[in-house]
Length: 334
DNA sequence: CGGTTTTGACCCGCGC
DNA sequence: GCGCGGGTCAAAACCG
Image (tube, rainbow, N blue to C red):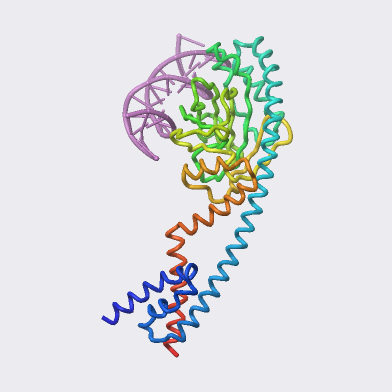
């Protein structure tokens, strides 16, 4: 019987400290009544003091983390703006390239792979850093299907740094993609994934994603064609099934841009804890237009997530109660 | 239940 | 003509 009462009391102790945060000043009697089994009201007060001290320390730590997060968000916002600028510039560059490529393809339409090689060489000339001379045969489709000829020349490459352990081959560019094939190519043991824009067939854009053979942490995404619909970030989309490829605009990644040419390198390895649910992602997307609000939102969201997380609560309670019981043992020994 | 992913089969261009 | 290799299809599995 004594044991059970002790057990019950200790369980309560696990929870009370959390309630101190909300109702510490007025709950003095209630707290003391919970500790009545210990018959040590004086030490309870001391322990409360120690707990409050500990909580203050944790709060300070949390503040520092929040500041760090804010700095990260600022960096992210800055880089994101740079990305947007660069992207808009690249669109212009690509359009110029389109006209050039169209001319070339008109003369060599029957030799799609050769034309393709030339476009690849162009791309590699623009970014001679990581290019695993990947044979993309985008022009093949267009010559096979003349109706797509108007979109064929728009080819751009994006180099995305990801975790090596992440085998998903997902490049978060904000658009929604449907995977329609995967192939292991000869020159690269890593499989190449084929995606179509989920707005297909009305949107003819395709992309190929494959890890670089030279640096497995880099994923090479080759985009073919041009989206004929607005960026999903700008759409108040309703449900849209699975948004697994969602959104450059919301992912707090750090980005780095190649200075010229239609290639972009994104570093997705430095992103903070990604939001776990689609709902969160959608709400983030809605706020992505205002960087300050975004930062604030990230901070709030992280704090909210932590406070909502039962594991975090349990761990905190365990840590506090552990310290508490430890002190109890010490006082009992006295 | 509808959309997406997986994956083996198939198609087609290219080189020999 | 044949084999190779990249790209696509489509049925089944999977998922929310």
